[in-house]
Image (cartoon, rainbow, N blue to C red):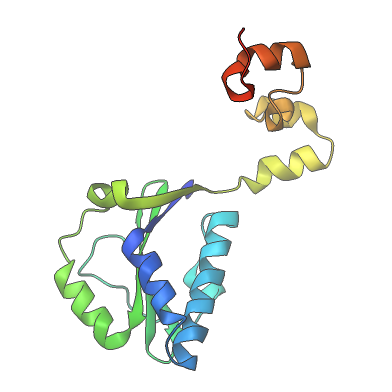
Length: 169
């Protein structure tokens, strides 16, 4: 199961560029953002759930998942254990060039330049929403974790954050 989604900074810049191009590129960028939203909210999804897929996978990069966004546009991700790296979006010609230049790619080496998102654990969230607090807590979800400062009174908070409000402790 995917627990972390990492967006490469180069991917983000390329996505922004696509929104400035022709209509087909904008549609492809929108589809890519929908896929990313689903990945962040659900973790593991099959490419066929959201877009048309090819019967073959990209074999030049290990654990590569290729999404066909239509009109020749592709989205490339690589899954390593609980981590999914979103690496490339672009047209087919640029995709071929990108694959050739990155076939020795090790996602763990580019993790430092990625923006990382935790996947929402829908199982735990639904348990908490349905009032099943005991099973939610047993599975590691702390109900009060949403607001850890809720139990602290104003006096304690002022002492902790005195530098921010310009007072001495």
